[in-house]
Image (spheres, rainbow, N blue to C red):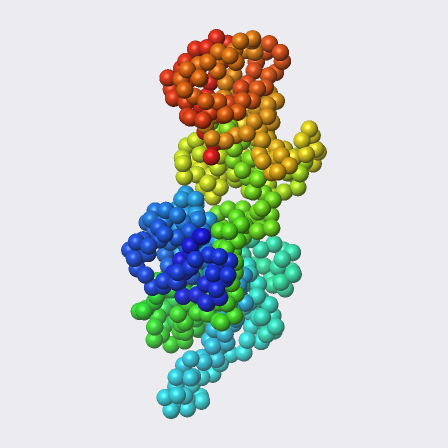
Length: 526
Ligand SMILES: NC(=O)c1ccc[n+]([C@@H]2O[C@H](COP(=O)([O-])OP(=O)(O)OC[C@H]3O[C@@H](n4cnc5c(N)ncnc54)[C@H](O)[C@@H]3O)[C@@H](O)[C@H]2O)c1
Ligand SMILES: O=C(O)CC[C@@H](O)C(=O)O
């Protein structure tokens, strides 16, 4: 039974779903890094929010971990390259808290416009300072969106409802999408010059870090009010403080900080500054949404192999997974066969599907081929880290889909560009879903690829099979299955034998010394 650790505070629905799906679950929150490292080895899945840091060290200790699920959007607390290298799938729940976070940005915009926190504190202090708090209307003001993705576009929709003019800076926003959203697409400098309010909704990346830098803030319209419910680090906090002090910035509301938890900041106590402790996603509705989504996604993966919202692996629905499972087994074996036979010589690989296979999601098939191919280099390769490894090795990967049906109702062909020229293997699925090799390097052959095997190329001549059987028998090696293919009578022949015990180097040398033998390779599958 798979075991999941929930290591951050999460709605109880998550644990309930794991249990209903037959997954054992522990809820242990508030652990230090070392405490997490001490226990993580016992879990197949880790469900987190933003407090748990999934670092390289944590992943190194997570010897059984298969999936990290983030109940939320931002995954900056997960070392994704390290997770990919360790073969761990990382998933998030990209939509579950978008409305809630957009509403928080709108709430902060109102709070800034009418100085609500300060007015509240003053009133409750018995001051009744009616003349101190003169606000501004939002109607007809210009809202500058930095980032118009899921949350940014909901903010735009709400702001348009408030009769604001919305302009957006987002290099990935198309003209069509801007039209659909009812926003004007602008460059950052135009946004800075025109916006009365600026709200940020981008991830923190090398391009967005400090996007509201000292220089950018200086270009902003005098009196601008700034809201950040996305990620700390998008705004230069020191320059923001100076801008508020000088009056160039009319107000700022931060839900997120460069350092969290933000227990001290020069911004605290600054007039017209509002802060919340990373509350963007904190509504009952959003937390139920993300808890349900993350538990469902992780359970689908751990139980059925379904992959949804993964950041380091192609998607595969829980419905598709059972159909694709035998194909992935076939693809993995074909990749492994090519990897073992051509190994280092491979420069590029093409994965072709035809017949029934062409109707399926090809990405998982490709991932499985690469996992099989790359396993020659590392035992820890799986579908998650294989594409990265392939890229690192400069392997060119091509996917081809043929609608035609050939000799087989379904076929997967893997062709490699090697230093010795092209090499191709192909396989099909039998009626019961059993994977079967049907062609190797242009020669038709029907073989299972399982356990220890021998691949022999020889000149097709009488007496060869007898001599081979005798040599193996004398060495105490029992033949399990025997598959033969040849180009033409008397030409090149291929033998694939499954053997009950692995063949050592001395016996391989004896086999290579047999008359008519061209190549002998020991193979292993599974
Ligand atoms: N405060 C919270 O509790 C809370 C809750 C949810 C999400 N978030 C954060 O909000 C942010 C946005 O989330 P989302 O779901 O809208 O993400 P999203 O991926 O849907 O949208 C991000 C947008 O940023 C744009 N973008 C990327 N680089 C850019 C750049 N250099 N300049 C301008 N735009 C750029 C992208 O094109 C995209 O449209 C994320 O950082 C997420 O982690 C915070
Ligand atoms: O889990 C949270 O409370 C914050 C979530 C938010 O930062 C996110 O990126 O989804």
